[in-house]
Structures are given as C-alpha cells and as structure tokens.
Amino acid sequence: MTTDSAFIRATYEQLAQLGESGLCCSPVELYRPDELASIPEDVLRLSSGCGHPLDDVVVEPGSTVLDIGSGAGADCLLAARRVGRNGVVIGVDPSSSMRAVASRHAEEVGLGWIDYREGTADDLPCADDSVDLAISNCVLSLSADPAATWTEIARVLAPGGRVAMSDIIGGTDPGLDAKARCETGLEWSQYRDLLRANGFSGIRPIRIRRARFRDGARAASVTFHARHGMPIGHADVQVLYRQSHRAEAERLVIGLGELVSAHRLPLGIRLADIDEPDHTAVARLVLDAAGLPFTTPLAVSVDAAVVPADDLTDVLVPGR
Ligand SMILES: C[S@@+](CC[C@H](N)C(=O)[O-])C[C@H]1O[C@@H](n2cnc3c(N)ncnc32)[C@H](O)[C@@H]1O
Image 1: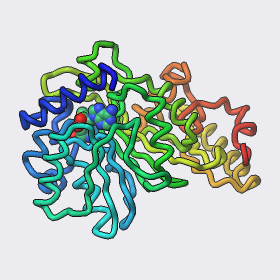
Image 2: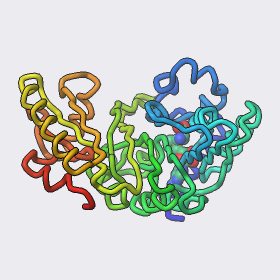
Image 3: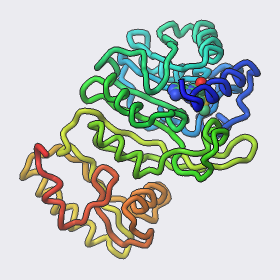
Image 4: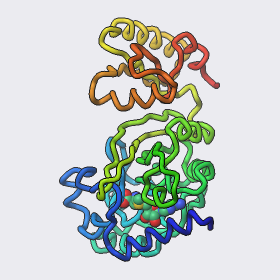
C-alpha cells in the first residue's frame, strides 16, 4: 500500500467511526426527495458523493451493478432497488468501518442482494467480464494509480458493459489532504484519454457541477457515461452550435445522417445549442479539452472530443 492509499484509507476509517462525513456535497443537493426518503439517516450522514451517477442511467432489472468506493452505501441502496432481487449489487470499499455501516443498513432495509467486498479501484474483487454497469461517486480521484484503475474496470465489465460515474476533475491543490478530501483530480482530457486507451467509447459528460464541500471548499465534478468494448464506429456524435449557426448545424446533421446510413453505422447524432443551460457546461468541457474558446460558433464532437468537420469521414468509418 502506498503512503497515499494508507492516508486515504485512514481518513475514511476515521470518518466512518465518527459517523459523519463532513465532506463533499450534502446529499440533499444530489438526490431527489423520494430517494432521500429511502436512504437511512446514518447513511446520509456519511454520504460523500459529488454527483448522482445513477441519475439519467438505465439500470436493467436482474443486472449486476458494481459501485466502486461504495462508502456507507447510499448509491448501492438505490441501485439494489432498481436491479431488483434477481440482480446483484457489489459495493467495493477498502474501509472496513464503511462496509460495516453499509452492510448493517442493507440488511435492515431488506436489500439482501447487495454484497459488500473489501477492495480498491485498482484491484477489484470481481471476476472478469462479470459486471453490466459500474458506478462510482467521488472515488476514482482518490486512486493512487488511475491507469491501473481503468484497466481494472475494463477487465471486470462484460462486453458492451457501461460506466456511469461522478468524479472530481481538475483542481490545483496537489496536497495529500486535498486529495483525500476529493478536491483534486485529473483534467478531463487526461481522464478521457485513459478511458479511450482502455477500450471505452461513447464517452459522454452528462453534467458538471460545482462540488461544494460541507465546510465550504470547492471543486468541480463531472458525471459521465461510457461503454466498454464497442468499436470506435459506434460513436456518440454531437453538433454543438450557437443560434446564429443553427442552419449550418442542421445541414451538417443531414450530411452526417447520410454518412451514417451509407456506412450503416449505429451512431447517435444530436444537435446541442451551446447556450441552452442543459448543454452549456458540457459544451464548455468539450471545447476546453480541444483548446477551443467557448465562443466557438459550431463544432462537432465525437465521443466528447472535438473533431474538425472535414475529418469526419476519416473518423466515422467502420472497423477503425
Ligand atoms: C468520498 S467517499 C465516497 C463514498 C460514496 N461513494 C458516497 O457517494 O458516499 C470515498 C470512499 O472511497 C473509498 N476509497 C478510498 N480510496 C479508495 C480506492 N482506492 N478504491 C476504492 N475506494 C476507495 C473510501 O473508503 C470512501 O468510502
């Protein structure tokens, strides 16, 4: 165990023993009222998420969901209700005190199909190809070895398996304490490259939020989706435009549609108005990562990376 891991493990052991996180966003900001009502008070007090990875994601009844860094188990409880008793939820966490709180509450609320296991993101106690959906909430930025973490996630996911994750991105404080408090993470472009290098596609930032810690500290978190084991041809294409370029954007979508049907590519093509509140944060992230100013009038992104329109015929070919 590296010094980083030992320090981080000790920090969360202590929090679990205190019974109060004091860290990251208040669950009241993250979860819907009906979800909050279904999570025991002790679990909410220890909840230290920076997003809501299960929001906006389809969870198939009967499927296997893995929660990496499950903590006191808030997201495992929500996932367990969605997979139902024919499914399985595996919560992995290195802290025995966190696992003890989580297991006690899973039993108390009668969700016996949650299985809490000791482990870390870069050494998951799961068989190869065994997980349909991996989720994680404010944990991967804690990993001492992000590259090994993504190789490990790819190993346990079944072909075509999905990830829905919330994590801290960016941040400037390199100190171990800031890391343990989830205030510093990789830049989004580094993050996306790690996913790509491990065979993920359809990498789609869904939501960016200011992660406001209960003591007032701030960081940025991103919730994103991706899929493992799909060929690059199955990309997610977005045409980002400003109102003044709407007609041009529509023409581009028609052209892309023709390209897609010529190659019979199962691509999702969407128009996204950069100035619409729902799209602004994601557009900013995608343009930033490409080194383009936020004022860019029209851009095409494939799997959340900007691609010059002229190069699309090279990128969107089957089998690449
Ligand atoms: C910020 S809390 C998030 C907990 C939970 N996901 C939630 O939303 O409340 C971080 C959790 O990750 C665990 N953790 C720390 N390092 C880890 C690692 N390398 N791999 C997996 N989990 C880790 C901690 O024990 C702690 O329970």
